[in-house]
Image (cartoon, rainbow, N blue to C red; front, side):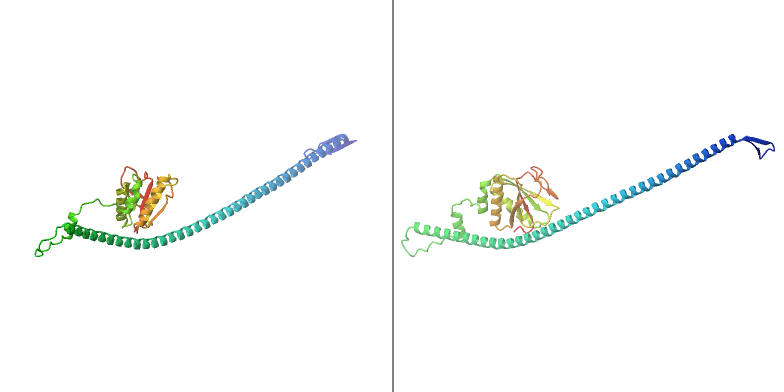
Length: 304
């Protein structure tokens, strides 16, 4: 079959047979199928991309939510732990304040009792010394009276009794006996003791000088340092290092009892930290150092 096709730009007729038309239609059908397949593939790719984008966004949001939730949980736990620590610190502070108040009350009561006992002891010592002197004078007079020969005539004026000064000067001199405190500490002669005298306590230097004198008379080796930058210590505190040998502990107990017996407001304890560490500043001898002695005697306010 022969067809005549008139072209758009030419008036010359074009002749195409049926086979050519069929081939051209087949080509167009295939081109349309390819275009349709490409369109379908593009739509599918767009859908897959959109789906993957939604999935990725959801995963990111889930991860962020989980991270925020974990952060909130951890912060809640940390806040609870901090609250517990603050509560425990508050309880410890209250306990320390109560212990300090009780210690001050005990120290004040002990100071009053010690002052009364010391006053009684000094009064008794003065009375006893006066009685001994009077007995010595009477004994001297009796011995002189029995040693004199009888007088031949009563007209002779009686001998004037010697005065107290003459009796004391004629009496044989004897070495003064050591005080009970010195006698009780002589067995620990050679023990080293470091005196920490609080700079803010006005009565501490005098008390330290008195106690140091007693220890020196007993054969101890005391040295004194002025302690500045520390306050709040009341009385005399005898301190030893944790784990000290029995001899050091026995000597510290002995000086504690001796101080209490002479009216000092004394207490015993252990150094609360490293033996070579201390707060504030110590002013005194350079050698030996202030941390070398095995016993420390801290002199605070109201030592007696």
